[in-house]
Image 1 (cartoon, chains in turn purple, cyan):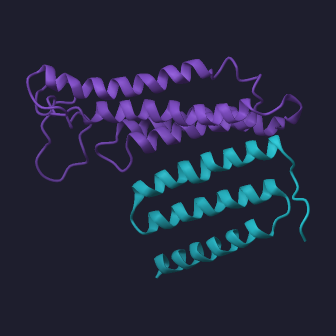
Image 2: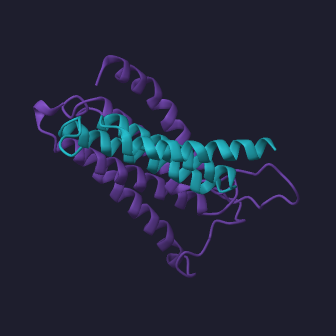
Image 3: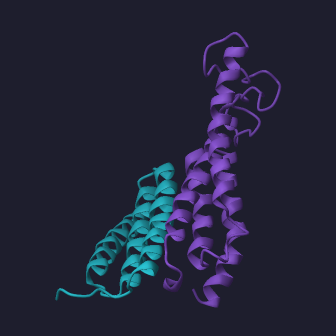
Amino acid sequence: MSKIVRFCADMLYPAIVIFGLYVIMHGHITPGGGFQGGAVVATAAALIIVAYSYEEIQGMLSKFLLQIQESAGLVMFAGVALIAIGLGTTFFYNYLANSGLLFGMSVPFGPNPGELNTGGFLPLMNIAVGIEVWGGLAIVILYLLSGIPKEGT
Amino acid sequence: MIELIGHVLVLIGLVVSAVLVFWFKDLLAAALAAGLFSFLISLEFYILQAPDVAISQAAIGAGLTTAIFIIGIRATGRYEEGGS
């Protein structure tokens, strides 16, 4: 692609990543969540992939690291749910809600703008799904790009 | 009233962009028109008060699908051949 496209992609990349991480992190109090935020972050990766050729983005996105990231998201999702069995309750029991620990605050009474430190393990689940969707959608686009012959760029 | 005007404008834009996808012979322009269609339909979802679906549609439809089309155009030819 041309130099203008590459410059705009470089400028937009951190902004899109930060917006996607915001959507993931506020998934339990605003519209959006793990899947939507992960798709937004994967769009930033797709922007870089469209603007550059496969040889130029070797140092930025690698297939191996994205595979590790996708698997880590799935392991984190299942692991957070399995900890509940270790605590002597049922699978997917929300053991962090109202506990006073991480994300364990009680929801304040009445109309309020939304408190980030609530929700029990739902924010952890959103983060796990976000990491998994980010890696999964980015690796689909990266494999598509790696199939292009070199003179086609 | 202003809401109704915005609604009608979005619907007209949807029809126009869908016709443009069919009409362009330059496939890159057709892919970008399809991205415009997805963006307008996500705006329509937001007007109909489904912001969750609107975020999904804007990210998947307008972002990733257009990227897949552009990568496909890079690997093959840019202009439509054959037919009339």
